[in-house]
Length: 295
Image (cartoon, rainbow, N blue to C red; front, side, top):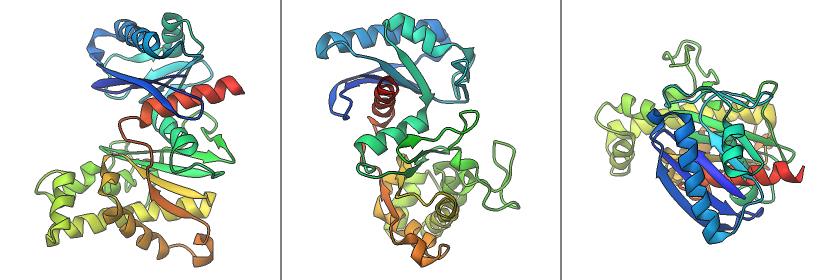
């Protein structure tokens, strides 16, 4: 199965089996300003080269950033790709590849990849948080990706945790994203990037530790709410900020324990991603195509 992860600056492609065994990968610049048609043509060229090396794919899945019209198979607006509005993306890509092609939100693809080939192996349900410039997510319930009535489920970063909190770019106040994103951490610390903040916190810097604790506590509120609503087997923290590992995750676990009735937590795990970050997007997309073909 072929997976394509459409990013703002880079497109990652790969081939894998239905069980998530990686066969071959490649990457090309997005160069989105050239328009969807040319970008998709270059995707096709890269995919052809991959399949020449590792064998013809059965189907293609692509993770895309932004809102989708799944019924009409339209990419309504690609986040950070100027001019990519109302693009019949899976039709165009499928025609270029001559393969059945499926489209899904990139964070949903990451959740599905984690469920099939990562930390979620053997579980029935999971919630994945992607912690990067913003906060995204995906939900799997009873072995099925949950996309909701319009395909927009999993916007975990825009759950309100403080109605009087900071204004979010989405127009709401107090979203999880305003506490638990790399952008929010850097803004709170005020002395450098999120990574620099975590590095300083690990060295014992008081202001950096305060910023990390503040972010972990905000994220813990979001997780506690999800636990009360869904009660998943597993919550996975992924994305650049989650690379801090247990330094972040242990703090989040502590915050969750303060907010959830203990008996509710007995069978719920909170862990970091087990899918390599560079492969999460395309791998989840390919595995989603495998799922769609099987169904």
